[in-house]
Image (cartoon, rainbow, N blue to C red; front, side, top):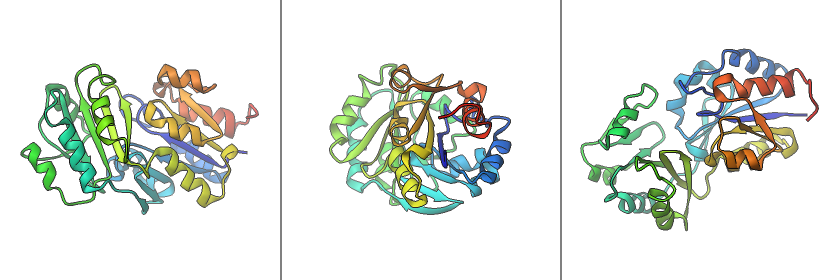
Length: 271
């Protein structure tokens, strides 16, 4: 019996316009009535996903900044910041690379600086509010705890451009993920989506085989691996679809809630 469901947001639960499936509130209410816990898992910070999830955010568990922060019913309970030295080494590694720009995520803010055209176009989206810095050097002056760094890569070849450079500089004492076609994420080596899910499972007393998870990209792999019933979105990367046998319909077709209704609520299939 499933007792915990965890889903990535961007590319999984949310459609390409960052909208929830139309039946999300109904499904969430049904899960609550069944005593099944629900966790929203994201690379974004809590304040960034709050407008998307609305008041429902106060009824669920949120694993934010790729596992660096965990919130339970709106209350922050777990934090794994990146050290100042790690932040500065990341900044040093990419400062002279063209078509790259970092974003630094603190508990409640996201700091950015003007960058290449593709990044500036992305930054105009309403779901990506930034606090703009005057210069790259101002990143080094941030004194708040940093929980995640996302590096925009507009080269068109992230796997061979920024990712190996960042990985070489940082992989010994941080976790480095390709989290999208234009993003590389750096978090504490104590943080990952999967580790965050495992903490929740341990706290709730839920076993792996009682846990369902949804993801679409490489930074979701630890999340999928932690669950006994991992589902890869149809729009997910092929490598993950090849690796995991359970697939959900695409994010634009409400794949997450559709699978929850089919496999859990309606119980038309036996897991």
